[in-house]
Image (cartoon, rainbow, N blue to C red; front, top):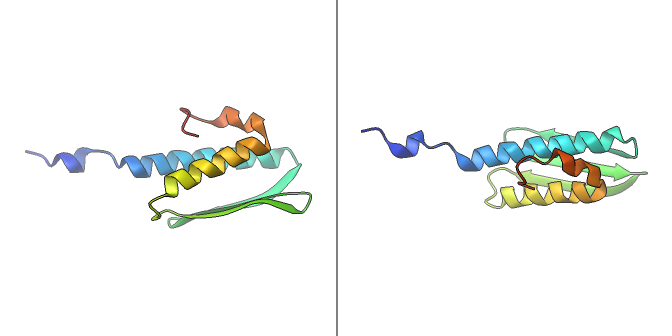
Length: 97
């Protein structure tokens, strides 16, 4: 009999990947407006984001993926970006954010 735990997808990793993709899309949408500047850095350990408007820092976040609250922190980042430019809410997939 196969080990059921090995057959189940890693839901946490899948959710994080979805949130990273949403955040990347939101960030790109913000930067396309030319009203905002910033950067986003993603590696295997962390997600780092910075958004500025007219040289004023609006958002700076660093989420370590091993943080047990990483999913809620990523969701919060997406909500903040949606508040900066509500049109980016159109990028939300499945209502996760």
